[in-house]
Amino acid sequence: MNERHALGYGLAAVLLWSTVATAFKITLDYFTPTQMLAAASVVSAAALMVIAALQGKIHLLGRTFLKRPLYYLLLGLINPLAYYLVLFKAYDLLPASQAQPLNYSWAITLTLMAAVFLGQTIRKQDWAACLLGYLGVVVIATKGNVMALQFDNPTGVALALLSTLLWAMYWILNTKNQADPVLGVLLGFLISLPFSIGLSIYQGGWGSIPWQGWAAVSYVGLFEMGITFVLWINALKLTRNTARISNLIFISPFISLLLLATIIGETIQPSTLVGLVLIICGLVVQQWKGKASTTQNAT
Image 1 (cartoon, rainbow, N blue to C red):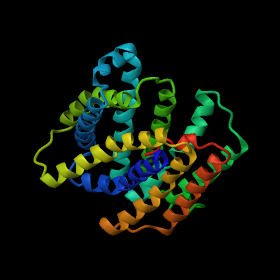
Image 2 (image 1 turned 45 degrees about the horizontal axis):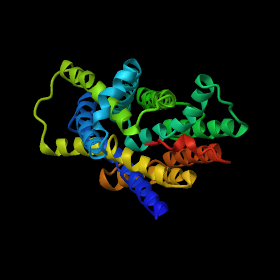
Image 3 (image 1 turned 135 degrees about the horizontal axis):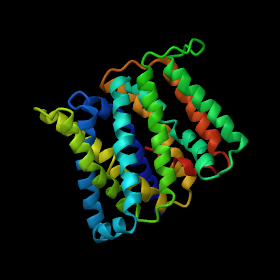
Image 4 (image 1 turned 90 degrees about the vertical axis):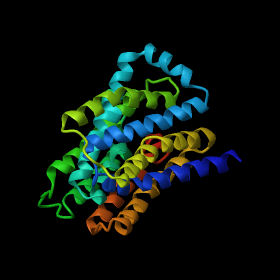
């Protein structure tokens, strides 16, 4: 029964994550990246507070923060503040069908950063995974014109790749976090809120936003940043086969591209599919013989 529930939670999380690239582009029609971060963070923090209250953990929030205030401040500034600001700006500059696969290479970035900051050994298959993954990145970024190395939007590509560094950095720092995962993520949102709201006001205020914009940003807050994280954690807790649940994440980018093409009409370049397959192959090689842990926290 637990395995069935774990599979259900895992599939629900992956299907919801598959929709967020489309939701990002729709939301960016109504908000700037900074406004989008601020509004989505409010929704996500509220959802996580409700979840923590239902789990009977909300009273531990202040105690958790006071144990390591500077640590949680740093985590909150990296994620959600810096990570989502950079990611949303990348989506603002690039077609989502390019930004999403580029961001998906974060697990390969994590391998390299873990070797530098945690002293982990890089195996031969990790180097092969990096080669395949970043070849896929170049194919997507150049729209297949690999030899010319010409980028239509180098700033957008750079921001998408920077988001992978920030996400990997966050999870490396998070390896030393012994707190409840829901409380840890909730603290990050609560800490980042004054910064994101203040920055959005500084950049020129909000103006009039229709209900469609608020609905879209609420969806992002709930299903990219909030509830879906809890579904994924529950799936990993209930399963006895972490690799099987983790491998579900591989279907997400393909569903995402299908939704982008059908809902918002993006043209999916053949080079995007080729590059995405190379990235997925790199991740599969990386996970070979038990290295499934790097995808447990993918989004």
